[in-house]
Length: 225
Image (cartoon, rainbow, N blue to C red; front, side, top):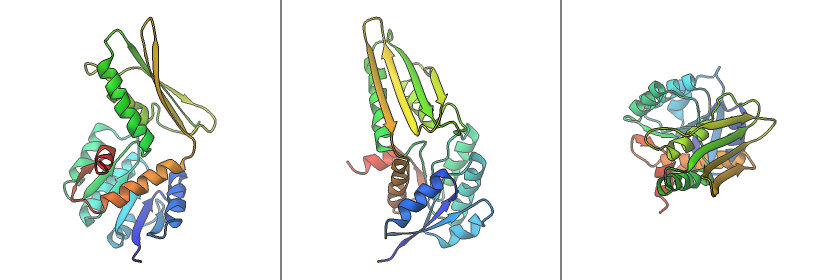
C-alpha cells in the first residue's frame, strides 16, 4: 500500500498532536509533525498534502508556500481577518485550499439548521448564541460561534454571541430563538477533540483529488450526496 505523505503544521500543538495520533493510527497516512523551527517550505515540496493548525500569520505564509509548490493545504486556524482570508483565496487559484473553522460534521449540520430556523421564524423571534470553550482558547468569540452567527444573521445583522472560557470545555455551542411564547434551542457539544482531527483528515483525503480552488465543509459534505 502506498501511503499518503502528510505534513502536520503545528504538529506539536494541541490539535497537531491529535492529528498525528489519528494519522499514525491509519495505515494510509505517513504523517510528519512540523514546528515553527522546521523548514515548512522545503517539507511541503516533498509531501503530498499538509494540514495547518497554527496561527493566522503562519497560516497565511503556509498558504503562499502551498501555492508556490502546488501542494494541497487544509487549514483549521481560526481568527483570520478579511485580508488574511483573501490571501487564502488568492492562493487557492494555484492549489487546492480547504478552510474550515470547525471540522465536526455535527457542527456543519447545526449550521444548516440554524440557517433554516432564522429563515423560517418571523422577525419577532430574538436570536442569541452562547458558546463555551476551555480557558486557554485565545479567540472569543470562536470561529464556530461566528460561523453560526453568520447563518443566523438577518438583514446583515449578526446576533449577539456570549463567549465563555471555562476549565477544560472542548466546545459547546447553542443558538437560542425566542419570542414571548416559546424558545427553540439548537445546540451541539463536542465530547472528544478527536472529532476535529478525524474531520480534518477526512477533508485532506478528499482535497488531494481536487483541482485548485477554495473549498469548505459544504463542498466536502456535498460530495457525499
